[in-house]
Length: 387
Image (cartoon, rainbow, N blue to C red; front, side, top):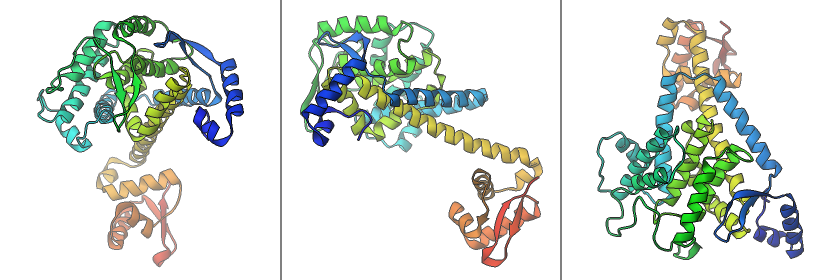
């Protein structure tokens, strides 16, 4: 069962009595958050061990990234890649159907208008994320939030005009795939007052923890749903900017929306669970932190692989390194990472090559003094030779 089960999960496994016990214990341990829901009741959370553990793990990964002292040009390239993926996946969540490959081809173009609305959404999202990054040194304001939505909505909704660059003037409903209303936002005048409180809160110092508050930024914005459209994309951009403004620069190397899109059912469920359980933000905070941890794990693994390649280059002189092909580098990296011997069969599987190609590659590396062999015939295995 989930570390923080919803009421229906508890009822399915146990009974009403057990849920009453769990609910009572949660309320006892709960902490009120400084933002009021549309019912004027505060959002709240329970700092369960899983949340504390995720905060600790994210802090460790943050320290790992800081310790690498990555070159500025490398960070720029990684950030650009992450920004494009975030623009793509944040738009995918809202229904964009363009492939990632097609999106990446178009995102570097100077073209501003696209006939395809999906591509326009993605391109707008890229511009919006760049806009937010440029304003990281400024306080949060209604003006910035409204401009964000204006950028996101540009050249879309041609057949159904909506309010752009301003908070909505009428009611708003969120529907599921079957057209069923799953949420109704607060009335416009109430939403405006809630946004006043939200902007004021955004500019305060983090409360319980910046990571917790970043999740709340996202959750509260979609609760208010202040715009006719663009609320989800705005919420994700705002939570990213909140992290960056509070010292979590690693967000520029990640794409949380990649995780959200690939775990979409759980994404929506965590938001709906918060609403369904009297504004218990624990559900979404737990999900949000899991998303950050997952993305950090991916970038950490990629950086470690690249570090292994750098270690190989450091181990060899430039002349030998220049003579190696991609297959040989990949195999050397595998041997160094696993600290194991490699067989011809494994080499062929890694590189999708023939036995003859593997034999030639091994022979060259032996002649260069990079690897050593053990065994004979089909039983021969190879390992990196100490330099």
